[in-house]
Length: 178
Image (cartoon, rainbow, N blue to C red; front, side, top):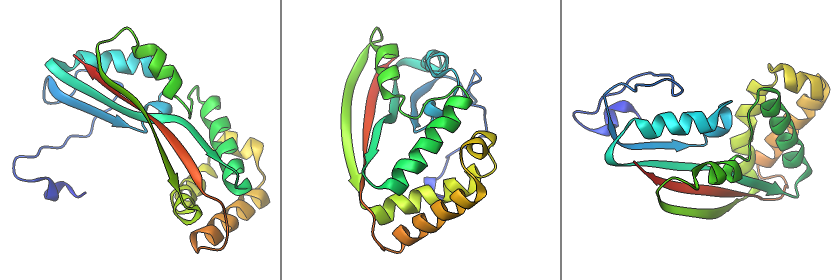
């Protein structure tokens, strides 16, 4: 969504999510989706974010519990992503860790939701990431240029609807109270 589509009075700021205070003062709502797996200290970020809420505010989290597929192309892609994130001190399937980290907090809701997507859609989501991952040292340690080229070609074929198996995401959704 373009900023202009958010309506009159919408204000945007570029800010490092690991640093507080956030621009704009205490918030009624903070939402993070598919973000905490990319932070080296997600529990610390959660504590900081919760501290940025007004009384009665909510912290909404939507993070990966697990991703599964029997498609060998998606399996290999996910192996590379997991390795890259581990090399950075991060974790793809962070949902179970977040569940443990928030058990002592007042939670309004906690749920697991599964979503299965067809191979073409999965490939459409993974292909742009693979292009960027080629520049990551951890990926370069685990896959040759020719393997990455082959993986990119297989993702492109699946994007065009040429075979492939679906993938399922199980997402951990948490609503934490201030």
